[in-house]
Amino acid sequence: MLRLWTFAPAIIICAGAIIAAFGGFWAAYRQSNFNTEIRAKNEEIIRLQQANINTLKGSDVCHFVATYTPDSNGRFPLTSINGNEDPIYDVYLIIRSHVDAPLDTPEHQAEALHYMMNPERIEIGTLPPGAKQTNVFLEPGYYQIDIRTRYNKLTQMLRFGPFASGFGQSYIVSDFKGNIFSKNTSPDGYSKVY
Image (cartoon, rainbow, N blue to C red; front, top):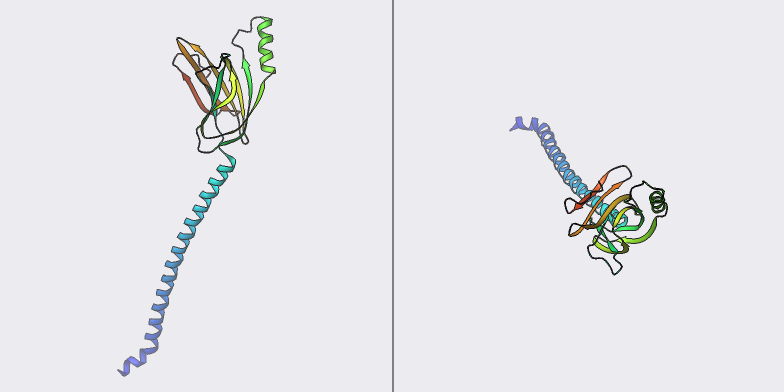
């Protein structure tokens, strides 16, 4: 027994070292859990801030189609299509009518120049998600629709009118860098704009 007393300080120091090591591992474990919780909360804050920015900014891309039912003057209402969850703010359109006539005579050239140089600017406002009929009515034809929003500029080429025994339309939506966001022609065989 007397011999153990000679090692008592070493045993106490060793036991203290084991307890200190255990305390260090326990602190590291708690810190790791704390860091995981903080990381999860930061990711949640980032997600909520991005959702808030998206709500304030709105989405960026939309397009317009002509509905199949004309008004009493034979003009067709445009319907906006916003396929995103967020609204699109401050939308206005600059509509230029393209003449399908060939540019073979001075009259056809003058008519085409008139339509290109005198666009119609129309304020649309906020476009909610989904489809919404606008107060814009167009006669069947071929149009360049410059779509301006608070944060984006798009161009849509739209052609619509009678086809076979029904109605056809074709459109393509792109930005000024050439990125295509949407295009469609219906029915098959209708003259495409892309």
